[in-house]
Length: 369
Image (tube, rainbow, N blue to C red; front, side, top):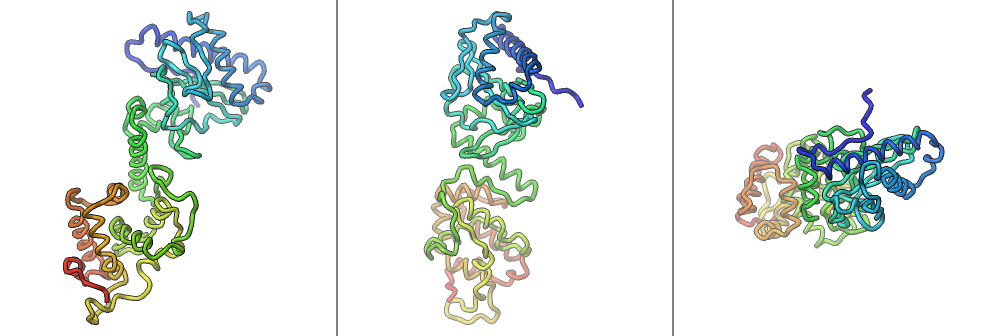
């Protein structure tokens, strides 16, 4: 197995004197830290995160004279500013992370970077593996961010063994320096779209519930909410999820169950009953049907006024849902007729629904009673 280099510099074309100075400083610091760690491994295993931050800063100050950098330019600002160490006047910073495990992975900092120092155009990650044989590595920040996870906020995941093409920014087809300067809402949107597209490509029913949603802090049951709220949710589900009209019943309700939890903090153990159970539609406009319609038709007709109103004047949540879940070609300027066309096509392709003139019923505002 190829040994991962302990220090990796930025790949900068035409490196200037500052780039070389910072690179030399950090390379020498890593050499110094690993040498001293090998001499007293037991002491390093007991270090806390703040201990590693102080060790990193003191080590950098120790080797600074060797590479020609003034010690007073190296400042530990941990807890107040991102990154933890600022190299004043050099436009560089160093983020310090460590783990007591024998591994090169950990949870990193927030993707928002709201406390980022204006002095740090470029950032290195200095990582301490304290388990097993204590060791330190350092590489450009973006090159060791493998993914995004959530604690109380979206945070990067660190993997110091990543190659250049495996970091989260390569996966999202962007560059860290472009991503980091986006407004927070644009960052959230870009990450959200990446995970939704990834789930679709892998044919998985997954949603990034922790991003871009404002929802109740407590989970509750769908069956316990009021009738008006249920009608609102059912109307939106009829709009957003083509799977409701699929001839395959296997995954018909799974995306809706995820969406309920994601958007409304609601759990529904009997999602099928809300759209398919409860009896067939036997009467239209006061006349008994010769052949009853499936229950989903009744749900659509009961909610048709709300559905049309939502699509003619969509709010931000609905537009986000349409962007996330509509996989068919549609006209952004005519959402209602786009939905009608999708519905008509879906009904025709489903043997259980193909005999229902759904478009005609909606255009004539038919009543299921």
